[in-house]
Figure (tube, rainbow, N blue to C red):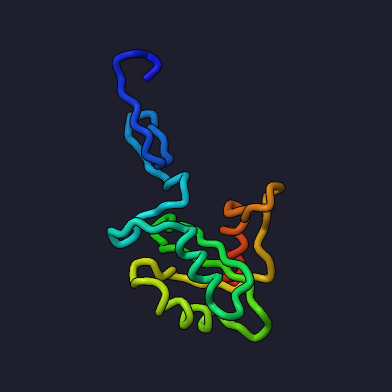
Length: 130
C-alpha cells in the first residue's frame, strides 16, 4: 500500500473495516456476484431476459442482505413476471435464475442513461409491499 510494507489486492469487492478492525464485504463493483457458489454476471442475466419475447428492458440487482438476485423488467402489454420467468428458464442454469422478477413501469436512469440500480432497489421493495 502507499504506507509501505502492505499489499493491495484489487478484487472488485466493496466493503469497509469497522472500528474493531472487522472486514464487512458489501458486494462487488463490477457487475459480478456469487450465488449458490456460482459466479454470475449481471450482463449475462440481463441479456437472457432481453431475449425473452415481450421484455423491453431488464436490470438485475445482485443479491443483498440475504436476498437473491432481483430482476426488474419493463414489458409489452400483457406480459407478466411469470411469462418472463418461463422464458428465462431454458436460457439460464438454476443458480443464474433470479430469485425474484418484478415488472416495473420504467427503469430509473442516471444522467448517463445507465440504469440507476440504487434508485431501483427501493422502487422494487415498494412494489413488492403493494
